[in-house]
Picture 1: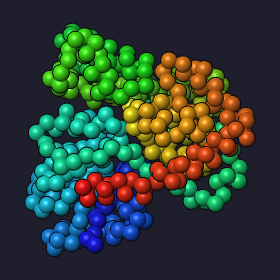
Picture 2 (picture 1 turned 90 degrees about the vertical axis):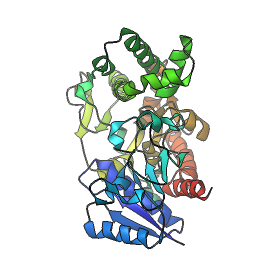
Picture 3 (picture 1 turned 180 degrees about the vertical axis):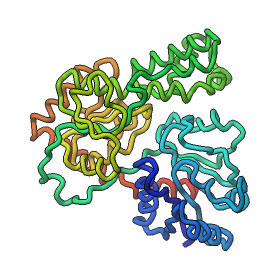
Length: 390
């Protein structure tokens, strides 16, 4: 069997990038593939990747976001634009998030792995000239606990854990209003934001709903709003996180928050702030948590890996609604989903799970079984192998 090249982001970048890229490669390792781990900051490793590709010894390469573009023979001269080795971009956020980098780089066989069903085909909004070879929808895999045999016997000394960053102290700018003075476009986008802050729905379905409600039916209208997607997405993402913690703080529920930017929100004194920490520290916190509360950013037709990681570390999960999670897990039994209409009352379950250990434990055990069977990195590796085999 030919080798698989897994591009690895070095430590020192975003806390999740190194761990995620390493776990992606490990997933293929664990299903019997031969994996070469190629660190992007190691010139000798990058040379080896090039040599293996030239020799025809590579089945495909895979990495987070646009890391395949780092393999160049000269500035702007992409190896994957010359050699027909497939590259799979694992998008760690929405395709219209600029943080994913330049997915439009020259690549002969470029595949996308997206985290939300509504993101299939969405890369065209940022890279309209790029033709991708294929796409697969699946969330990231969950990270398995190091002490797997002990996760249901260990003392859980953290009541609630929440892991996410906050920007601009929660006073997020309405970016689309800075991009255009057209009052009609601003009004449409205002309605998209209002709809997304009232219902657990991803961006593109929300855009289509608002447009069709006005009688503006067709792809051209969606395309016309594409330049504003990143700003709308980012605004809603932060506002949803803010509101999630705001509700918990109002209920005086003790929450350990991992991630920067929460120091100056009005309810910061009710939170236990840990700031930006290494990924391993968040993972350890999940293994100590009774409950992990998770926003979905805008993955309301998909899922965030923190949900599965929490389950695999023995915590009960309370999450913003996702149609994917609702299908894969029994709501109010294996997972507890909240929407944006009844959030305050639905969040009562957090306190109930903290105080009712038998209920919390039963829920966590059921969720753990499903996550272990279906939502590890090995499961995601098999999905990619199926896509490329087809």
